Length: 497
Image 1 (cartoon, rainbow, N blue to C red):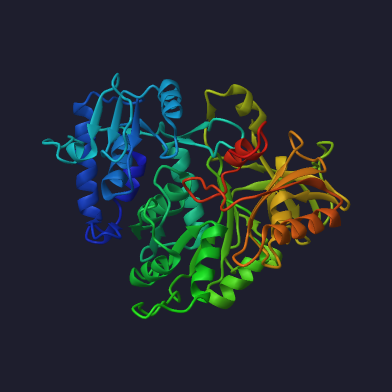
Image 2 (tube, rainbow, N blue to C red):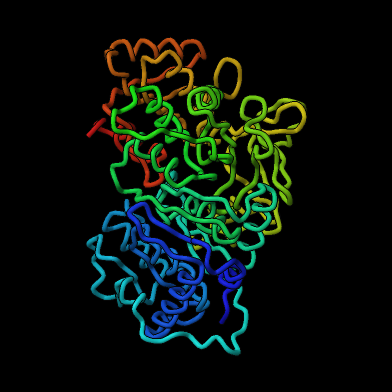
């Protein structure tokens, strides 16, 4: 069967560079698609048929990109085994998704005795090519990606090829991305942040994808050098990543470093977490880049952005073409009207995922056909633009109404005494006045000073809570603060462990 995704990629000039890695491996579009055909043949030789599932345990590489397309080419679907999965998580994921084959690269030890496995390099050396004559177009489900797992074990989200292709092409047209753009990806290809905003955006536009190693200990200065070296024009990263780059440019420049030039970075995108107005201003002043905030999800795709200008007032965004929006009050569930209000964001589009597999309750709560209830709180500003504030479950009942935990975090770190912080509402479902704050004091600040700052901010909003000091905050594979882990550490009986 012919993949609609692979056929869309085939339209671009075969001699142009499609994918390269920061350690020197590169493939043109022709070489990449030859590798896709070879791997597709290898998958077929291993018995993979249309509609079946293939699991991946892979690091970022040209072969990983080709493997994703090869699975789509044979009409199968893939599911990644995330690098932060425990042995029990891997077992649960395999039990739910029932893969017929696991593709590995030897970088991880997995208990897979009962499953057929193949090394990715063996697929790349398959001795035959698929005969594509007489193929029929396949547009079924091609992948299952995992959500962040903020409310328990991650949920599997299924995407059809045809809907995904429509959504990606719509986003590319809305953003003005085209051939000649160079995408820098520092996220693992296991997640939508990497595949949707980097891999498929590059390959469907005819651009070039540069893959960094998410597991490498590359400091922010090295990342700045790589952005310069590869003449990057598009990158999507989390607020914490941009904060690292800002801090790196504020330090003395190393003697042996080359000149950092981010003038080509025309679309520095930022999504996946709350983006503070302060960071927007610092990035513009110190890095010389105008961050374009975007908003979407693994389940829905891209919903809003500030693409035509670096940022609207206070980091506001407008819906992308084909997406409609409305707000629902946090307290009583009614529609919210007015010029500047806060509520749960509800979205609608004709090309979203198929929803959650293996969790009917969560599916029905979130996918209320034809709407997608995001679980995110947003503020609608005068003129119809939106500002994302955080998860609905992170809403706190302050003296002045709903206050989202990320906004509280921004206040706590404003004077520099606290370097990092995570505020964890203690009321199940959110909208209580009690919060547990995990704070990392800045270098040169004491724990007592950090506690004092937190106490003053909580008192200002009429909130009550506890303060825990930490040396650092745990991160997910894509760099978000790992709040489920923090809850395990600080909101369970016995305290930190």
